[in-house]
Image (cartoon, rainbow, N blue to C red):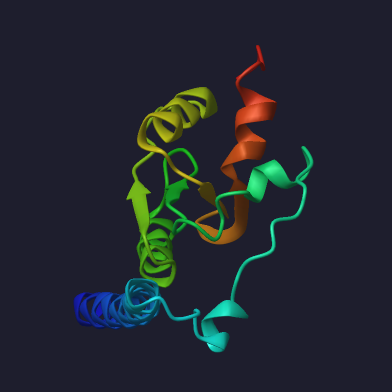
Length: 154
């Protein structure tokens, strides 16, 4: 059942991307034709022009949010039980473009180095108490990078 749901979600996700790409292609084609013929750009495309606003240091964390899809790392606490591993697998199906990593004996700083090397945007840490999943930490990666890379305790 999980594999079927995974295939279905991937299929739907790919089709939604194809639809977006098709719309962008059509808009570019209309603009290209108008420029080649020397005609003004159609008004419906002219109104979609993005207005660039001045950015501050606060906006930098989410500057690339609309330009690329998030890449999420899902990991568990140390020595996970079978229900926690199953829950992490199901979370992997819920979030598009997510990857699950078995934590093993890695400490937080090693996980962060892995995220840096593979260009992740978010980390989801699944926690349990006495064999029952009870905690879910969703952490955007720029925050992790600032807080933990200079931490001597990690």
